[in-house]
Structures are given as structure tokens and as C-alpha cells.
Image (cartoon, rainbow, N blue to C red; front, side):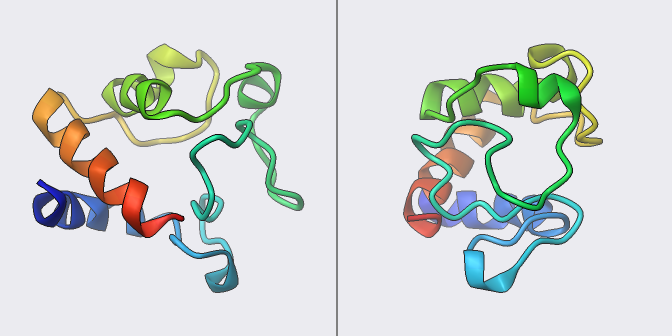
Length: 101
């Protein structure tokens, strides 16, 4: 449900922008996130753990990240604790697939 995902995306928008031209906030912008190597936006200070992860953002890896960021990449500095609901994660990812292209 993309419309529901948009509502869930408000939590992301507290720290991230969806378009590169909007810059960064606490977290990096999310434009082009799918298929991109984690910790690859120039000029953003990522945690050493995320830089060393070798992670590439796919719907599957993002689903695991959104379930438990600190458990998926131990040592990440992202303060978000995750979405417990698999349905929430699926809806949010469906929205992000549209808005971050």
C-alpha cells in the first residue's frame, strides 16, 4: 500500500530528504538509494560500521535494515529502532521505490 507507505515515510522525513537537491539533514538524502552502496553519499559522515558493511541497498536489504538497523549493521549510529511490522516495512519500501528514483 503505497499511500500507507507515504504516511510511514514521515518518520524517515524527520531525518532524511528523498531528493538530492533537498540536501541532507541528520541522515543522507535517499534519492537513488536502491542499488547504491551503503555509506556512499559524498560529504556525509557515516558510521565506520556502515562504511565497512559492504551493504548494497536493495528492497531485501532495506527490509532487514528497517526491521532493526542496529541489529542488521552492528555499530551503526542511526538512532531509529525499526518497524516491527513486516506490513509496515513492505508499504514503506513500496513508497520509497517510487519517491527515491
